[in-house]
Amino acid sequence: MTRMDAGITPEQFELLLPLACQWAAAQEQRICSHGQALSDAQLPDARLTGVAEPERVRLLYVPEHPALRAAADATQLISPLTGGLTLRYAIFIRSDCRFNRAMVVHELGHTAQYERLGGFEPFLRQYLSQCLTIGYPEAPMEQEVISLTARICGSPE
Image (cartoon, rainbow, N blue to C red):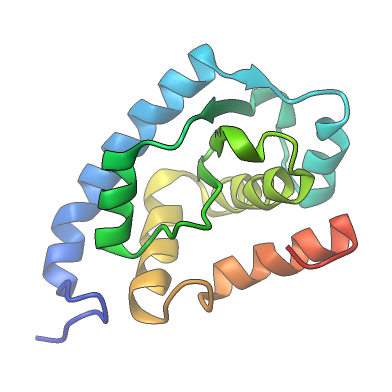
């Protein structure tokens, strides 16, 4: 039995993936109900990233929360530098990153990946597997979005 670099066996990953998909779908529904649509300035960026349905994207600006920070630090999948999290058409953006164009473009790049891969299960399977085995930000899906963001915004993130 092999282990992923983060100490999770492939068997554990298969058990946890459906739970992650359920959580992501519930968060997407909540954010899409209460979040803000992309602004007129953000819609062209969404199209440039390859988002097929930018009118479905919603942003929810959230303050930093100490308990969530502790959980993020423990998993090492989200760092103190993380300003956003994409759950298909729903994007959490840390409040202090509200006007950070590169941050929003980066997260829109993940929305395009969700669309291309076909939803929560295929995206999360590939993305989380890469992050757990290769590491973040070296994971190919993360590198793809980092490069895309640099091309659109004209500078590194």
